[in-house]
Length: 133
Length: 133
Length: 133
Length: 133
Image (cartoon, rainbow over all chains, first blue to last red):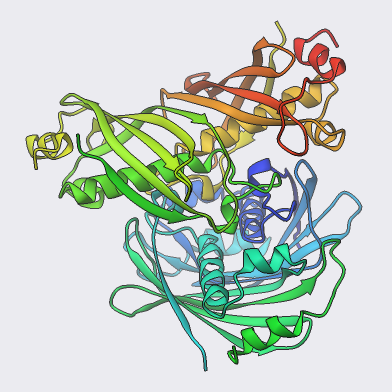
């Protein structure tokens, strides 16, 4: 089971009037995790797009377990939960420095071409996502 | 069944490199819908907070069905799906001008006090949310 | 002197830990004002882009005079301060419901083509921006 | 002359329909730079706030010289340009991997207390900002 762990620091702009990270920002943190997962697997997403494959969100879910404030360093754990030729489901955990889970969730992404039409991912991407780089 | 419909226009800053609204922004659109739902029910959320009740996200889910570009006017339909004294589940649809659903989903909010401790919502809020204003 | 006045409501996500609108959001509010100014002049910016002219920021400046909280309705006043064939300077004021100026500033935009190369704006855009629609 | 250099990676959510970082995000990058400058000087801003001093923006200015895309690693150079007991002016440069300046600018921050009233910064903060830690 391949797991990528990456860290990010909460920007002041990520917080809201409640004094904690705004809930929508966790989707940005998931995106940071997904970016680093793909880079680590040898398929940086920027390159994947340049090669003509776009991964667009078809579903996202977040369960909020805690909260984070400005300047905290968060860990984002990312892994692939399931995978087909046209779809990949990532799952994520966002943890604070004490390893408390602040949020967990998943996103399902569909593979499309430049015009938005569903297309199979290249085999190289499928196998890299699987962890059999 | 009480449904609030409100409109919002896509800001340039809401879009991303794919040329469409970034997926995390739909949680902000849901939040706009929730804000207007509560105002229409006579319980503006800003007032609810001033009175000492905070509704914090415990879960969010979005299914993406289409995409929106800069400057489009979107309709956000918001309703309460379920409700207890300490928890409320809103559901949402975001539609374009042709009434195509671009995204739908829900959020579950927990009622807490200023310190973050779970507290029952005042009865006036519960009944307003129910639609029996 | 053509002035466009448009209103926007502060999203919860626009605020930060200080309990007020995050300072970077004022550039988004300026952008909302600029969008509505251009629409009112008959040259909606989305259309301008489709026709091949892109207005990119070359400078932005904001002076902060006050603060706004979640759910406040703000007025954005936008006008063109100066204009050449390749450059336009907009100035803005953001006011609260009591007509207090919360922020004022300007942005300078350069006209470029799809590839980012400087190009003269079409005459129709120049005259519309001037207010001689 | 004390200069802090810190790096940040462009989030997908930071980009807009033009395929590059949205101009308002540079104020967030400046904020990241300011945060790291203060941490390096031994006065982490989160701590400064906990001690009762809030630095609020009174002015911001950005000159845009280039553009950045998703996933680029940017360097943010931050230094203090001028300083009084109640006000500090930071200046910034944001550079790409080839040391090209993409944006430069400044922010002026005023020192206020919890209630928003102007107050002198503690001497320890003034001297740390000066670089005479």
